[in-house]
Image (cartoon, rainbow, N blue to C red; front, side, top):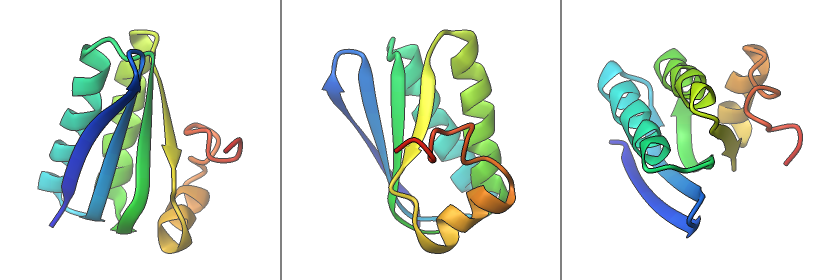
Amino acid sequence: MLELRTHWTDPATANVVAEGDIVDPPDEAQLHDKVCAAVRQHATEVLVDLTGVRLIGSAGLNALVRAHDEAECLGCGIAVVGATGVVRRAFEITSLTELFGMDER
């Protein structure tokens, strides 16, 4: 079961914290909606913390790519933090680490 929560470190930076697995279409919709909600609340940066995620599939990656594209149109950046093990590997084999600033953090 996927759990998501958002907290703000300052008025412009939202942290979306995920716990669980992100593998199914309902997880994809939930993650996409949570990230985009922060963007709509005028965040200029959204940090997606995947420390508590054990597994991410194509649905989860798709949710983040779609949210990134939508956020970019509004001048908001999305970065992924805390991805390790098989979760980080999913970003590496799909060449998404640079898009989400994972090589910089």
